[in-house]
Length: 366
Image (cartoon, rainbow, N blue to C red):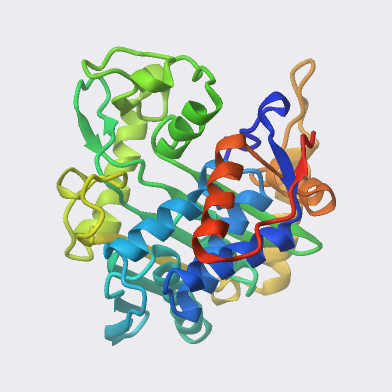
């Protein structure tokens, strides 16, 4: 996701080792009643976001996930069932599972199908918020395949020139294995910024960038407290972002028989007990079903190396999708992940609530 490293140094309340965060997320979700598969999938997805600097989709989601698990929106012990299996496709009924569990299970099946058929596509219904889409695309790349993940969400993004919410942030992710280096990794919302960014900036009391969000009448605003909707990606050419969001809506919701975003309950409530019925779509592509593996690997290597060597504007660096995130992951694996003060306070409250050891936080980290 292009919007990484969202916590500025002056707003960091402390740093925590990634292993500590993983342990705490697993402990809290288990204490909240989630089964082992749900706790593992949700923690794995959140840690992907936090590790790679996508803090809006990282461990700061833990308090929300606890709420929806305990209040009934998300099934703590779901029974995921595949149907319509044949050829290169399958359909997954997630039984109102945590969205990360549904997406990981769906991608695992897509990879298995692709191993035999060259392509595997899984439509997911009755899911919920799954966090960073790149986590699920990456699960395929780690198996040597191209991974694609799409998901719809509740309406919070206006159309180009629109003055009302219509699409969700509807993310698109694609991960491609690159022999000898980290995968090429694209993870983007089809809105100018994800909604969780607005929540994060509210917590940080920080102004939003220009042209990414609007008030209740569709007018641009940088005040996170005044935001009522997001702009589609593309700025003056936002019709492109709106079109991409529509594509995600069709593949993830309509193809799965789920409601479009404007008919989905809001992520933030107030109803946190009724399942939202989100749709998702994941696909795995085995490169050597189309071209010799050596040819594919050489082509990717040449493409990415040439991209990185391309001339840059003064004071900038050209990077491939994912490069920034991989570099941040290395930093955070060594120094720990930054947490904002509000998240630290919420974690301590969760520890008290469930009688657990709070994460070991190094105060005032930079």
